[in-house]
Amino acid sequence: MTEAGPGTEGVFVAEAPAPDIRIAGCGVWLPPRTPVADAVAAGLCDEALARTTGMLSVSVAQDEPAPEMAARAARIALERSGFDRGGGDSGAGTGAGAESGAGAGAVPWSGSGSASGDVSLILHASFFYQGHDLWAPASYVQRAAVGNQCPAIEVGQVSNGGMAGLGLAVDHLRAGPAAGEPDRRVLLTTGDAFRPPGFDRWRSDSGTFYGDGGTALVLSAREGFARIRGLATVSVPELEGMHRGDDPFGHAPFSHRPVVDLDACKKDFLATHRVPQVIAASGAAQDAAVGRALAAAGVTLADVDRFVLPHLGRKRLRAGHLARFGIAEERTTWEWSRGIGHLGAGDQIAGFDHLVASGSLGPGDLVVWMSVGAGFTYSCAVVEMLERPAWAAPAPASPTTPPGEAA
Image 1 (cartoon, rainbow, N blue to C red):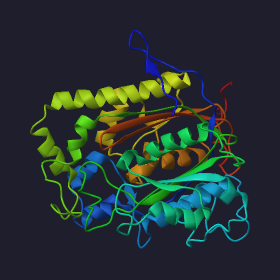
Image 2: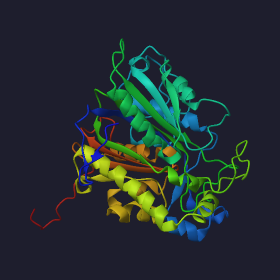
Image 3: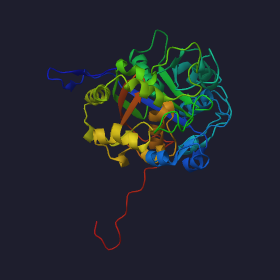
Image 4: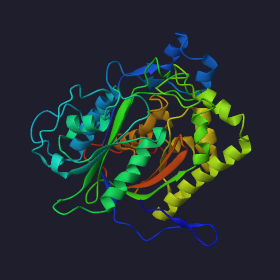
């Protein structure tokens, strides 16, 4: 990905402009939502913690496997991109209502349309268990949503997996088509289901409630309704122990704890590391990622219209993003994300899809995506809207002048 480097005085300066990488389609598939109040009443969640997070509900899958939700989102994104399936029912709705659960069947692409020939790379990012051991979920997404024979690769990086995949997709597209390739397009998906007994969506990561669902992006070097103007990722490997703690390496999943407990790992790590140094290292990496992405785009935070941030609880969101960068809550997707929950690797794609599908974005609008994942890695992207796609809702009506007042 094209990033920026520090100038002679430590200020990030943009490198030479790179070819446009565009977003041709996006899609989200979310199962029904479970109110946080119901979880509190059932004793699944502490009431005081629930108040602190400000969350209203989270999306909870019933029997839907994580890769299948990703495949459903992929079919929505591909259909919105205008790719010909070559016949057959897409099994997925379009428009803003697609997230509510359209697309019940895993109907594969026939392979005779342009989608199978033009998708040159499939990347699937995830956070938690995908349903089988020693198995390739990216290949499932490929079979169920595309049906071609291009490389299909799984991306880790937990909560930063979607953004890490975005960086890989950009590099692939900027390399240009290989000999005999008519074009290159990348399908990027995420999918997660945070199910017991291994994960407690209410308590495994105190202050963040986890939601299930799938997301997808279709990226192209030639066509699309939005373009990526800046993208950067910065790693802080000295903090990798934050999610490892003092436990020795296990020989099988859940060797030491039957349920993921990130708070216990953080407690162990901070017992031997100075908190101010940890905060400083984390903040420096986050600042660097944001600074590089903005410099590559040639903009500042003041130029940005909307922000897509991780689906964290309100307390964490304010400390890590809103207060830190001076971002007003109403400029983010908070009012929507507080009803969805943290989608693992998919928050940024889902938030962008919501803004586009709801008609909240128009030509020229700038959107900044921010992300963080264990490791630790920080990512930031600057996306510019070129046009409002046909499947998006109309722009919200402007307020009218009250009677008796001159315009």
